[in-house]
Image 1 (cartoon, one colour):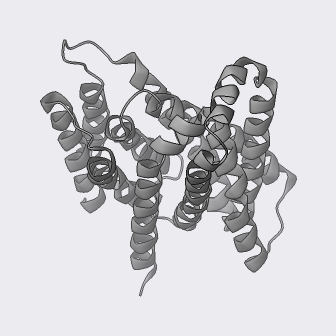
Image 2 (cartoon, one colour):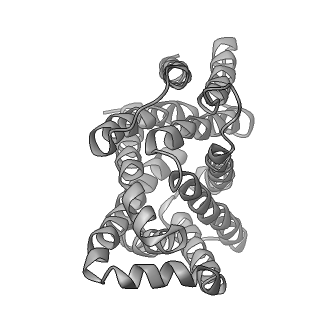
Length: 292
């Protein structure tokens, strides 16, 4: 297989893994809370990153370490923000907004890395953002501000990938930069949880009253999400070291399709006709973006 085929396989794997991860997130967030769920996911996710880094050892410059560490802050913030939305909205509505992320990566691949883009590509990117606006509209055509957290999460993750792609694309390796970023993200979120623990004391008391056994399942799910998320990021990390970042980003744009299917299966999620319209527009534009 040539490099392009490997890129397609890696990007598709990332899309499937992230879609599965997103669909699972509702239960641990509702049972454990945003900060604890994020802490478990980020900490457990360190294991796959550490293993890959040991298998493919390399040295990093101080600048690459600093840039990866800065990216880690955006990574952790993205998780906190997306789970803020999913705590009140269904998974389908929340993660449809994730179509914004590949659009940001594609824009960077074009502008920052000099990858070619046609007029059609530019139009499709604009359509993706317009579709996100439609998804956020409520029945009375007002914006659902609770989904704004999902938008901000994708912007935060977009900034994370912009910094990481900058490091990985020119550094030629993805294992160590992702490990550094994940470590900083985990430390930042755990510190945030510790600082604001008093403010969530009532939530902790409620959790204790339900018994520890009731928390085994959501904790296990959060741990699984952490591993799945790490594998997805490693897969797209490989894509980021190639010259096909924009194409890879177009492929991961199909991830919300899997979320919608699993959300329907797990939670019986429904979207209003207007939201389905926006969703369809975003997915169609993303697929065309990947093909052309």
